[in-house]
Image (cartoon, rainbow, N blue to C red; front, side, top):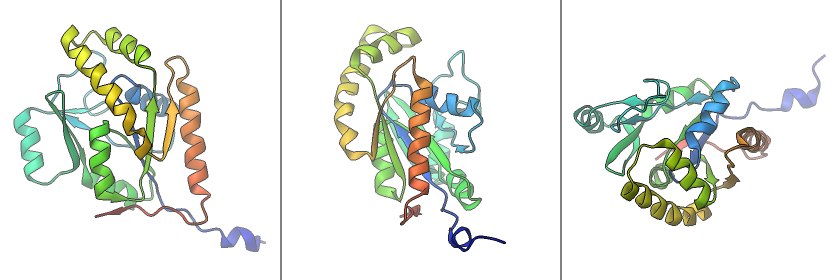
Length: 207
């Protein structure tokens, strides 16, 4: 016989989780570790005009598009949010997110700090998580990429210092140390578990 308490437990609504932080903080690495652990989320694949890196897979890491293709999607209203970051465009599909939530799937996405600020104005009920690191570690990670010249790298570091101040606008802040990705993932799991147990669950609504 089913316990009366169990039967009274409602199924919590799906969550929209936004992982953000400055360039080099480990947003991509964190989500890749979550995917490697087969975590049951719908991972949003961002469309970008930036060049594809050697270790990236089309359709898994990003959807790579020309500027003309991106502008066409933008004109159609395909993007929930988009941003120009260091001269490259990034955007996330609104229909992709809406369809996943309608299926009851928790949705997780990684976006830059500028994009998170835009999303905060367009969506109610999302969970915003800011990944933190020291500027020294950010510099080490960015240099290891070998994708920017010295001027571009210094531009990213200067912006990162300013972006760190934006963490006060987020729900949670996590230290994301390079050798402790699993700790970051476990922290995110703990946040989501707590959110699922709220007496007044979040309801994702698009404005």
